[in-house]
Figure 1 (tube, helix red, strand yellow):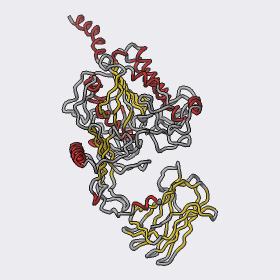
Figure 2 (cartoon, one colour; figure 1 turned 90 degrees about the horizontal axis):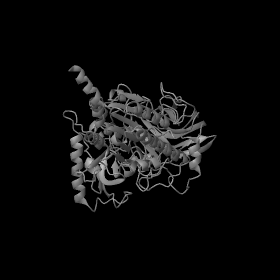
Figure 3 (tube, one colour; figure 1 turned 180 degrees about the horizontal axis):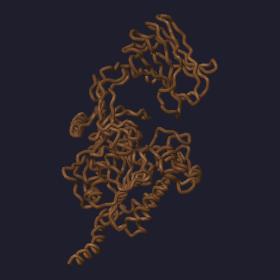
Figure 4 (tube, helix red, strand yellow; figure 1 turned 90 degrees about the vertical axis):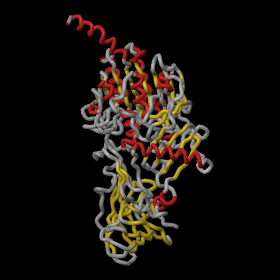
Length: 615
């Protein structure tokens, strides 16, 4: 009897296992909605394998991320929970500081309307991730590529993955895309090996080994994030295709897109060759919109036109992304959907696709999009983005959240209105895809209804965001545009062509920024001032590409000044790299006001930059 029973298990177990579909989740990094040929908005980039993928399944026209930056979106995919709920709202998961609970600071500098805010910096292992759930159900799980949710003990291995390659916690590939790399304990197999090709190879090798049992492959590509480099032959190819009048005109970025696409094709080829096509669900998605603020080839990496904005802000260019889902036999091949979907939807969706239940007591901020995958409407009233940060990228926004209902999008800018109230703007994103016309004044009832729904979401998730800053001095933020801002212990005003520094704490500090980095060499910072008491100036400066970026180890010997006398200080220093910004510390000054007539940067006796204080 026992021998018969064992034989029964041996014969039937593989068949039973194959009833559970394999899942391959391909996540691009920083790939914008207009960076593929899926939506007809590029003439430069070539993505034939994404088109091939789309012909097997459904392309989603309106797919959104929960955040315009990578780590928050990644956490939302793996947990099914919104960054507003987890508090992981910034991409700081590679930094040394471990924060597991978001918090708001009590105050901020006088030129900021909002207080400071600290995001969570690791994906807490208390969450039952999608990978853990698959693991519990007998799936073999593997992660390949970018993670950016924390190093050990917050790596993929602690979050339900049996395999993690290259076991790297950084925001991009270590060193470069083209070898030699700088990964710890992970090296190239041949000279100039491309990291995306290697990740594709590793994922294929895993599928070959585990084709007889259900598997979950998390192939999160490093492409097309910085550092911006690519195969030399591909860069050469795209140089001949560049249209200088097109906003998408970086040959390096185009080459990076091609490597991304080729490795999507590599995955499809392997799935077909292994005979598991009919039993493999494939998701393709991106973690946020395209990068429009770095520089490569004399231009930005890409453009999200006709969408507004990009990576790092809550405009649609930052959160609307390409999305394709393949489910053989269930999703109509070559179909498209106009339903609103978001990154928190994938966890409950993949559970339903695989016939699995959530863990006990488990709930999600997303919904299963299986009805949409089958050509039906979704029963949902809204999706949300939450980004309580202001990144300073082009077309930047104040800290904000947004709610989408149907064809409408409502922004909330936290405490950015009169007397610290929230400010709202409203867009009809179907008719106004570039978000150019704010309709909030014309649609007050809609604004009120959508704002109420946003209130419910923020309350339900326990969202943390900056508060109104009690130290805010109206008008002081205009100084920031001229490159001057209080760093600590002071507020600023302009009066009769002078910068008036009101001291609020001992040892006040000022930040100075340059519109264009100053070349290395021997430089002088000249400061003309009057002070309420004797003191000194300590000069610190930051150099491009040198860490720590902000002034920790760059200091010039104190330059003293006398009470109530006009003092003209010239502070010499030598920079080895381009200089981007300065900080002026005033040790010994405890109260009163400092009046500054002029701050100039000199080289060889000539003025290279002057900070002006015109009213």
